[in-house]
Length: 443
Image (cartoon, rainbow, N blue to C red; front, side, top):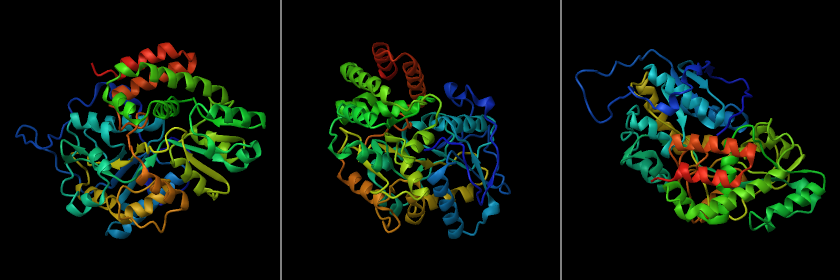
């Protein structure tokens, strides 16, 4: 994850994406784009791939530890193959929690000009592309050794009807509460003693009385509030109710939705004073700088702490968001094989490498995530990520997420973001409850 626009020099070539023409494509799908995966046709043969083209990777990792992680991954890939950096082109498409990338990719696919691969959340985010049959199957890449090394809940999100179509490379946790240790100690707050999401309100008041921002949060875009709401929902109603929510079985959930929205509205009084004009990185920066006590974010935020040299346990700390101790809400990144692929051999080599222990050992520590393989050495992982691995193992539920695309189809996700964009202006709990029910009801 990552939506920032700051970037440092990189070893690999980058080009600019033209995304303006793609604004409406997410809503209408990819009609006319198909690779006929699993079928053949004499009328429209698949074009021959342009082997002389450079391998092109589209991603949104342009800031902090995320950028470091991608560079480490690409360096490892080159070291493990006969390719060199002149064969690689990066196309960053940051912005909107993946919406800019999706628009760019869909535009390219409509124009029959697919990239070699691109970053995408597995699960329901794959649905429009799968429906349009623009992904190649990856059964040859997913050999027995690789499949047996992966966590089962992850492989389920990488398959379509039993066929592998994506290679996940990491697992982020969404239900985190990060904090500045000096600020909470000066305020007299113990994050480990907060057991319920409602109890966090009292901690906010104590922090505010001490002269700090209680909760660093941005509302410039809707997705951070969507992810905060779904975390509050789990904290109030539990993971089984959240599973029902994802399945569209919402008839019995109206009270839980309303309660979580009401609590979110109460939280809003403790948000950053500049909440409507800052990015999530800037909100995280308020915790880093000692201006704010808490922030809710995926553990890619920890990659930022590590990138600037902050020490876990002395500068910053972490607890599972109150009420979600035994839950590990998963946000995963993966890569796919668009077809017709401009660099099929190099793309296959890259996807195969992403599935290795070496790739995941290089990528995940700077990214602030844990590997989906179970045989990755923990030697390179800092104490925070070792703790996260232990908490993943101990978790009783590992649900996908709404805000980061794996849990619901993109059309519903986009509609829900629109619902929350309105909520951030009106804070009307009743109206928003009704709109969420309408959006997620499967009947």
